[in-house]
Length: 240
Image (cartoon, rainbow, N blue to C red; front, top):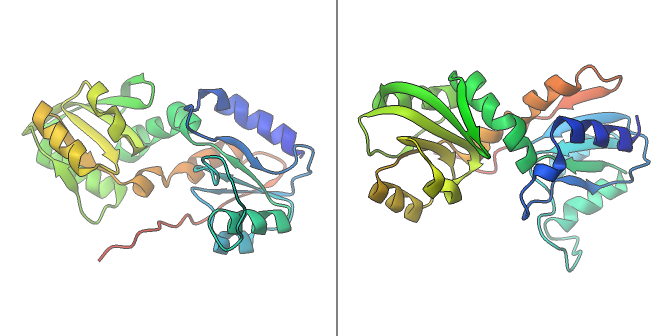
């Protein structure tokens, strides 16, 4: 299939126009007329992953390799060292980031990973009705996501309505209309503000809450007349 056909399919599935103004979802590397021989799905791209890819492959990542404008291409630095490797193997890269969060990923993590149906959505925030004690709910979140530990701000013994934003959603804190907010990358000052306004928070990790990107997108691409592979996405953090 041509890259242009695959781009159109992805755009229909999760329109790139929905992305945030600061985001860079869409075609990052490649020629729209290129013939694609293989699709690989991953949260991010690194050198080890590129080495496993076939020439003329399409790598679909959740996070864009390029976020802002590039002023230099220094091949011993990120992201230029990865861009050079992709170009050498004629590998294309499309990112599906904030658009896919809105249309698919938040719903999937809420309903299929945590096991709570989404009662309503407001942009990047999915709302769930939990009605459980905070301790029981927190343990269920920990176990469902396979977290080794929990960072929490507890303002309630009982939670009814819960908000969820995968990845890093701390900037949405003031918009949340719930007893508890699940998101990743919670900063110290976000935690202090949450405590001040009486909003419980559970840090569900950035990678840990987004690592389902590949398996979810695979469901929509597996019937293509083309090999589609889910890469083993790697968390850049390790924990003791």
